[in-house]
Length: 342
Image 1 (cartoon, rainbow, N blue to C red):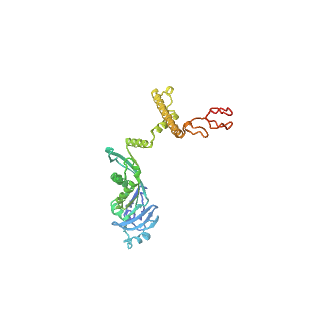
Image 2 (image 1 turned 180 degrees about the horizontal axis):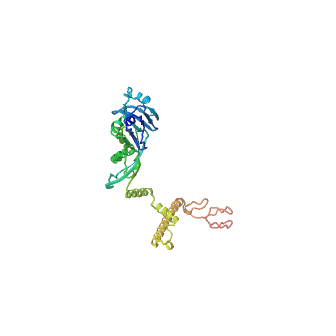
Image 3 (image 1 turned 90 degrees about the horizontal axis):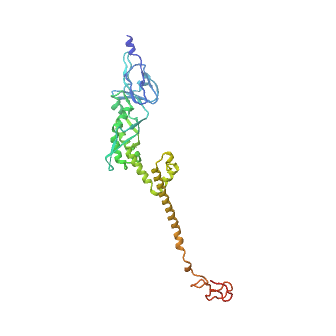
């Protein structure tokens, strides 16, 4: 007798197993007794459904009385009356309404076809994606109808299983430079987001964001890319050698070996390198000096070619004595005062 009355006690309808990584949870006891109470916490929606049909959705956090606040708003159960030994059969689905953020990474390398590497270039990628539940009818029809709970890990596993295929697709469309895919990360991410959203929409969920954080190359490829980038930055090899020499001397890496165990051969190589650089620098300075003097030499002319104003064109003797003003007639001494003219 006690068991009979115990079975008729009012129950509390609430999310007993709430976890941050749980997308939805279905209330297990589908018989709702008279006097029962519904508890909806912040970040949750409670959905009453019967035979796959939604009867009512409670979105505001709070406590609800089944008799007075729930039964009157349920679509097809408004006329339901609790009898002495009867309960209302209806399933309740609690949905986590927040937006989930999930980290992802490729399970295995993606082999990109490239002429530089006949066997293909293996790369890995990682990033994050965001999703949330947006369609309760599709969620119940496709997932909640056969499952009592659904975890974020279920979605992550599902997404990762098709990521390699989608990455290959969108890298082929957007990744113009296979050795610098990070430059096209935004375009690749946008394309993958579009495809994943189509995949999850049918189950009542929406991809709100998808991001590729990093493309990871093999170490050999990374070293090759770094070396190529450094070479492209150096347009003047002589200047680069001078800079390297200066940095080496400033850091002490090119100092003599002797007492600190350095190699004599290394020191000699450093000295030869320094001498060559010094020779190149002196040559550059001389070339620069010659280039500056050359225009001046072109402008200057021999003294003999410059006309002597007031004098004879064939000699340096003036036409008139600068002392007495008498005409000289080309003599070396003035005939009037004896002043030496030339």
